[in-house]
Length: 137
Image 1: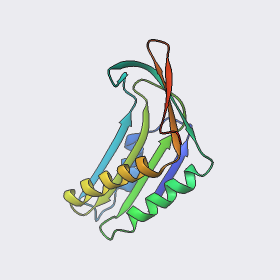
Image 2: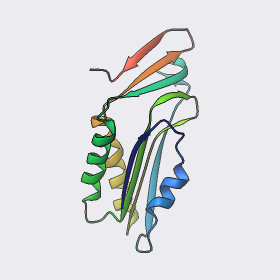
Image 3: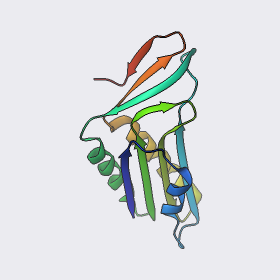
Image 4: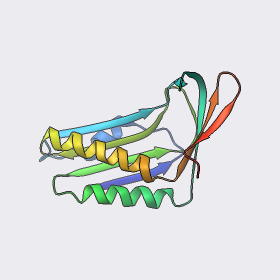
C-alpha cells in the first residue's frame, strides 16, 4: 500500500501511522516536519508553501521508489501547501517494515528524497517583517 498526497488540509500523523499498520509489520516509523518559530537565528511568524502542479506526481514517484524496497510493507507520505502557522505539520512520512532498523532507514530515506525532489517552495515571514523564499529555482 502506498499513499502519497499534496494537500492544503491539515496533516494527521496518527492517521498516517494507522494507514501503514500491517499484521506482518513489527515496526512503524513516522516523521513529522513541524513549522518552528525560528530559522537561522531569526524569529519566524508563519510559512507558506507553494507547490508546482507536478508536485503530487513527483511525491507519488518518490513514494513508489521507496515502497519498491522489499522490506516495505506500507508507506504513507503527505506534504501540505498553503499558509501554515507555528506548530502546524508540513510533512508527514510513515513506513512499516518487519524490523525497526529497516523502518528507521527507509523513513529517513523517504523524507530525504521528498526534501530533495519535491517541487515545493517555502516563503518564510520573519518577526522583523521581512520575508524570504527558500528552495526556489
